[in-house]
Length: 192
Image 1 (tube, rainbow, N blue to C red):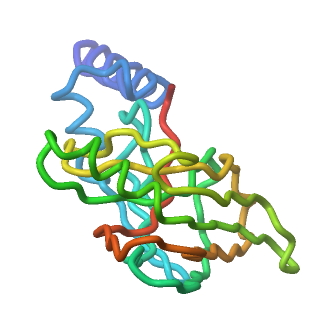
Image 2: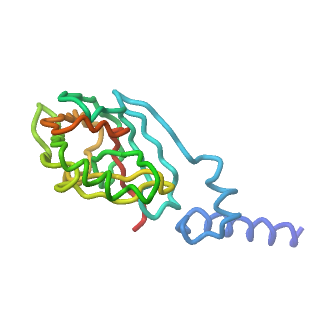
């Protein structure tokens, strides 16, 4: 009887420790046992698909995918966003590139494409905006897996709980018909 009581108390203490222990500090096998079945989570709201890869992510925990855009013609596209995580998010463009040796050339060609991205909050209030040459005025950084780059320039923002947003992307001018395979995404969050 005493042995059972000791085992029950020990298990209760271990369970309590696991509940308060930061997920990032857990060994891999233990993290998978506790959290692995829950992540990645995915939900849709408005025009967005939000993916949460879990609390072990140091950066880019959340990926909000909105849809593809064409950079080869003047156009305005907008998306409705809701149920966004209350984490710092960056708005940008995921551009699929060709072979690595051509990346610099593609960025130079993108300099002829001038775009604008505007984020509106409640009551159509402008939250942030960025306009400029895609190749010169926006920041290019390697994205998931190294086959694409995340091109961003809009300041980060932290969505408010249950607020709705509208993101607008506009191709203002093009000097050539460069049509980069691109999609609009928001990314952010993580423990760093």
